[in-house]
Length: 320
Length: 256
Ligand SMILES: Nc1ncnc2c1ncn2[C@@H]1O[C@H](COP(=O)(O)OP(=O)(O)O)[C@@H](O)[C@H]1O
Ligand SMILES: [Mg+2]
Image (cartoon, rainbow over all chains, first blue to last red; front, side, top):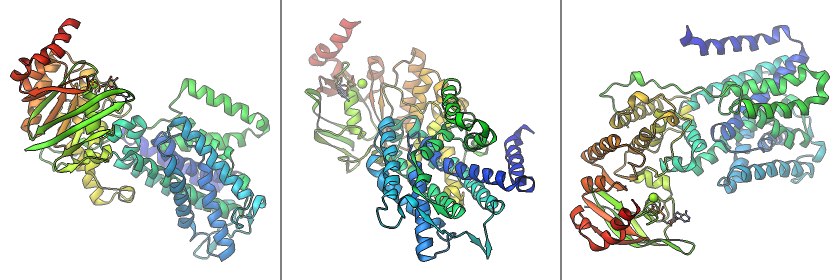
């Protein structure tokens, strides 16, 4: 029984989530949808902050690039927004590659400052309509809805299935990655960069790829967000959004998928439940962060140790 | 046959000549010792070999490759693995995963094959696991494989660094004070282990303060003092070398 505890938890959680549309109204489904979007965004940030331990507080910039790529191409060229999903991802990934490359060697606090600057630069560029494409501070409106085989996704209940299926697929793929040499390499870097390089890990490359992969996913979420809102403006991608994502990862559990999802529920969901105390949100936020750092620095649900099928290895087996 | 050739290697830190025009060869299959008083520049030589530092002058050839300008991970994949004088393990990861780090550079699977768990990726993971277990068994840490590495005893942490290095399938392994912090019994075990590495066909270059150990297992010994090479030869030649006695062995005895 204990052996199946984790798959059972996943099953129970999935059942609970996917039963939501049957008893929640549109308002609460929209809250759940937002939690889902933040969860995917935070999971994508988790590659950089969680697995690799890089202080990156500019993730909203990648989210913005994805959203604007989708919005511009959809409104100007009428390309179906769903087809633009990988394009949004690729644009954000390319952007991440270009901005991360020169700063990848920076450490801790220096990297933090530069990534904060990136998100501000992107926002200001969008406000000032730099390429004449982004509509300035008004943003872009009239973005079309996603269509699956002639079925248009419009209502929160419909977006629910889109967003949470996307989340489920992402979680599955990321879980696979966690059990590969890719996330292991990121973890080695987080633990000790010099030892990682000295053991044969191309540290600069893996840090860059963490950024690129994280940005790819954030860009795709940007696409979903654009089609959900049909209107995007620079204010949706400000520094505060980056901070929220960062906090979700740290509070939930750095490098832990289940932790990050829990973090999204806590950070995005709780304020909705306690709406009457909305004014005290920042205060509670700050206090919660301080308390966590003191009492549970690894987050609510830190990563579990990975399991390896060592019992399946027999003495004569082929080795690397 | 020469596996590693160090030629006129020089490294300055500000005004300090940490390594001054040092040349020596390491022959294939030999156990070679690099000795000298504290601050003589031994670790710096290692850091130059492994690409952690860039030499001011001189060249390093390994197995037909000029190592100039190569990054550390590239040098590891060419076949030089190292351990650190101050232990550098991945503290929060398991003993097994520490060893798997060494396998990384011999693996090919990328993001896509891992996300989709393609059959070649699974096969590669399994082979890496088998390799890691083999190396853990080799150094005698297999029973501790699920522990977090920071919970190992000091001596075992040194052994784990060796296992991690071996997992990268090196031709040359460079050990920076492997017996540092080990008790007599552990040091004895280590001697056996280093000889077993040689039996496996590995070439070993080691820095060590335990003269007893060095004289027993090193077939060739290189002596540094103030960054300069002052003598090299076999144990007998080194112990009878006047400069070595004055510069090194003498000082050491005074200190003790
Ligand atoms: N990164 C560095 N920066 C400045 N000085 C260094 C650095 N690394 C080593 N040194 C200096 O170089 C000299 C040789 O050091 P090292 O190679 O560690 O000696 P050993 O390993 O023989 O004890 C010492 O004086 C040390 O202080
Ligand atoms: Mg040293």
